Image 1 (cartoon, rainbow, N blue to C red):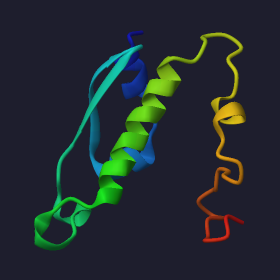
Image 2 (cartoon, one colour; image 1 turned 180 degrees about the vertical axis):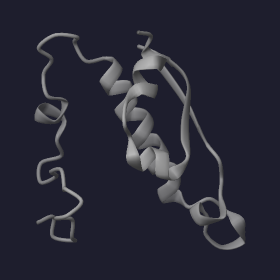
Image 3 (tube, rainbow, N blue to C red; image 1 turned 45 degrees about the horizontal axis):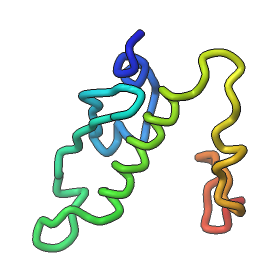
Length: 98
């Protein structure tokens, strides 16, 4: 399986919600596109900065996954976690992270 096929086979619901499509991938480069839609914009049809950062986050996640070791890989969150950050499950998400 190529790196692009691996990314395209992953379920990334938030990337799908934003309309992100991955068009190129290798171990040192991932290229994705996201159409600028009205619901991703602020005033005057300008894309929201958060949408751009969310695109960058999706690309970074994909690049991380294709670079993990095939067997017995380490948990990428274990070393890269930002201290107080932790995953929030959809049913539990709130501003306190509980």
